[in-house]
Image (tube, rainbow, N blue to C red; front, top):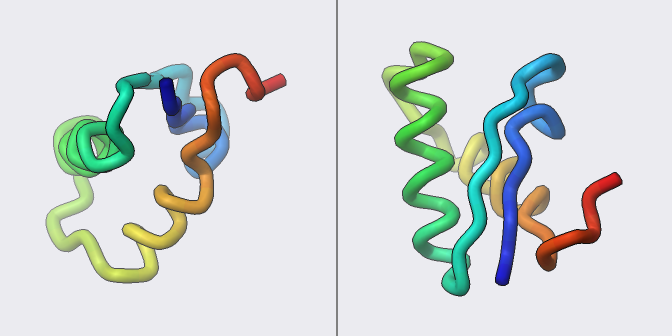
Length: 61
C-alpha cells in the first residue's frame, strides 16, 4: 500500500489516502486539491510535489 498525507504539502490539512496503486493515490490527491483547497489548475509542479510525498504505508511520522 502507498499513502499520501496532504499535511505534508498543505500544512494543517489532516486529509490522507492510501491505495495499492500510486496512480489511484494521485487521482484521489488531485481530486482533494481541487475540491478542498480550490485548486482549479493542477500544474506539473503540483503533480511532482504530490508524487514525491507518496510513501509506503505506515512510514509517515
